[in-house]
Structures are given as C-alpha cells and as structure tokens.
Image (cartoon, rainbow, N blue to C red):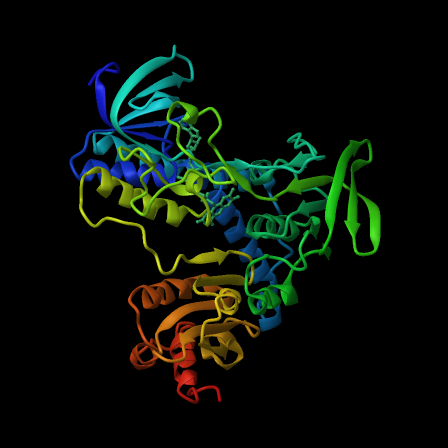
Length: 467
Ligand code: FAD
C-alpha cells in the first residue's frame, strides 16, 4: 500500500496502548498503519518507564537480598557497582524486548512508519518522519495513543544534567552522593530506592502529608518502616531549585518554615501530562478534560466515532496494563465487534519498591468516601510460613468484602513480592467472587498466596494460622 492511499486504520503512538491495539486489530483482519518516532514499538513503558526501572529495581533488590543473607549465615563480600555494565545490561533488556515487538509487528504485516503524526482533518494526517519530508496520509479510522510526558514545577527547570526527570535517572549516568527526589509518588519512590541501594544518600520531598498520596495508609506504613532514604520531608513544597558550583540549592517550604539545602542532583517526579500538544486536535474539535486528557466513551471513542483514544492520553490511572487493555478494546470497536467496552472493576497497581505495595479494586479510602458497608480482613505475614522463610515479617494481605453479599470488592498486599498476589485478587474482583470462594480454594503451601485464603478464613471467624 503506498503512502498516498487511504489507510484502513492508523494508530498514532506505539506504546503499550498503541501496539496492543495494532496487534489485535491486525489479528482481527484490519490493515494497520502504526506511527511512532522510535525505530520499534515500546513507548514510554519499554524505553523509559516500566521495563528499565524494573530491571534496575531487580538488580538493587538482589543486592539488598544478598546483604540481608548475612543475617541468615550466608556471607558475601561487599557488592561492587559497575555502573557501565549495569547500564549496558539494562539497555540490553530494553533492546531485546523492543526488537521483539518490532518482529511481532512485521510478522503481522503492520505498516510501521517511524515519525510523528498530527491531524490536519477528520480523515487526514500529516506525518513527519525523522529524516524525510513530511507527507499527508488519509485514513478511514484512527486510534490516538500518544501517551504522556514528564511535567516539572513552576520554578524548577529540568536541565537534564543537575536537575533530572525520570528518563535522566534511568540513564544512570552517575551515582550522586546526595540526591533529592521531588515527589513521593511511585516513580519517585522506585527510582529513589534504586539510587539509595546504589549508595546515594536520597531524600524525598512530598507536598502532601505522606508518601504515595491516595494509597491506603496501612500499606504505606509497611514501606515507611523499611524505607531506605536519608530523610523524608512531608507537607513540604519545593519552591525553587538553583544550580550553583556547590550543587543544586533547593528551598524546601515545610511546617517549620523554609530551609535551604544543597544536593548534588535533584530528580523531579511530580507527575505526567498527556501528549496532546502538536497533535492538531483543534482540527478535530475534540474535547479534553480540565487536566487535558482526551474525552472518550466506554468504547474508547472520541466524539468522532471513527477516532478512538487509549492509554495515558485518556487519563488516570496512567499504567501500561490499563493502556494495553484499552488498546484491545479499541481494536474490537474499530473492527465493529458489538458489546466491546471498557468496564474494569479492578485495575491493579503495584509499587515495585522493597517491600512492594500492591492493590486492586476498591480501597479503604474510597470505601470511606463512598460510604460503602464493607468488612476489612487483614492477615499479617508474620503468621505466614513462606513470609517467615523469606525473611519478611512486616507484610500483610487484606481483603475488602461487602458486608451483606460477602462479595470481594478489593484487596491489597504489602511486603516482599506482594505484587505477585494481585492478579488473583483482580480475578476475584472481576468475577464477583465471594469470601467463601477464596476460603474454599485450596492454595499451595508454602506460598504467600495462602495469605489470601487465610484472609478469607478470617472473614468467617478465624484463620488456621491467625486468630
Ligand atoms: P506511551 O507508552 O507513552 O507511548 C506513547 C508513544 O506515542 C510514545 O512512543 C511517543 O513517543 C509516541 N508519540 C507521542 N506523540 C506522537 C505523535 N505526535 N506521533 C507519533 N507518535 C507519538 N506503568 C506500569 O503499568 N507499570 C510500571 O511499572 C510502570 N513504571 C513506570 C516507570 C516510569 C519511570 C515511568 C515514566 C512510567 C511507568 N509506567 C508504569 C507508566 C507507563 O509507562 C505508561 O502508563 C504507559 O507507557 C502508557 O502507555 P501509552 O501507550 O498510553 O503511551
């Protein structure tokens, strides 16, 4: 198909949303054109998000674990950090996965155009490849999947040298002695944990009253007991950050007034904004929310039914698995499948720190806000054989259960590998399982997953290992 022909489906952006949509649409028999600036699909998640951060966290968790093992009688020498080797290993992981996505795209016969696109009309785009002339392209249907970008604070300019964004931090160009992370959300905590483990003295500045705003406090408490940071400033605003010869001078405005502190590097991790700029949305007259996200219906369609939008560009939670799920739905909608719609009961979230914090479905905070009549049951990992055997004593698993119907509405876990428990809880919530279902499902021993079964046992009175 030539570049001037009318394309059946054009997808702009090849992150987890865009490539999932492209692959599924192609499998459904649609001719797909996928446009992205990178040589292969992957988006933020693979190139500068989920995957490189989890590779680094795996490495630092391995180090922490090895150090902990001396308490159990296994002594290692003090680990040495070969920064260059770490970087090349991490880049290898990214390359392997993105090359793989490129092959999956090719094998499906998807037309992949490396470049940027913007709308010039309701069925027309202008595509600007990196090193070729721009050209215009007609399409029948389109999916917008352009994701999100880092934002900064009013008086703080990210210069990528002294003041970093998450992409700079993932490059691991150096391991600074003293570092400040602005923002106590999951990205700040994950990247801060990596640098702390590699030897930096990391402080966190968070504007609200605690880390991970919006997350149930009992989960955050488990992290607080083991957090690896030099200092955590809460209810603290960073007013400005100035680069000088001594480092980055930062004004921290907290309860006790303003204090100036100097750090070698500052990482700004205060959130992300949708990539709607330069997309030519004005040509479509498509509405956005007050935060700039594209408005879509349950079928992920914009006000023009032939144009869908998916992933970070449509709003919170900005997570890869939510983007991919929406991508598959948009592909089915475009393919004309009746009944396809986005209606999740449980979007799992995991903070991959050490310990991990994870949850899905209703949270206690939401239950309170919505005045839901629920019962919360919590199984402490101190009573779990597996948790004890892996040296974890402060974690827990909890279930949020409808008091009347006994249906599982949400669940959470905190502790080492807590994230591995969340898929079962998400399935339980999606399927409308009851506490009885979880109590009667035989869970393998010794695993952390038994804590789900024992939480359900608690709902009915007492658990085998905890009363
Ligand atoms: P993106 O992945 O942002 O992809 C959008 C693509 O569109 C990009 O390649 C972009 O270059 C391209 N694009 C933009 N404009 C145009 C244009 N005009 N023309 C063509 N292409 C364009 N999520 C998780 O679920 N788990 C995690 O552990 C996790 N960790 C993260 C860690 C970090 C440090 C960061 C920054 C994010 C993390 N996320 C994580 C979030 C996750 O990366 C995003 O939610 C996810 O990538 C969103 O997917 P998307 O398809 O909507 O967009």
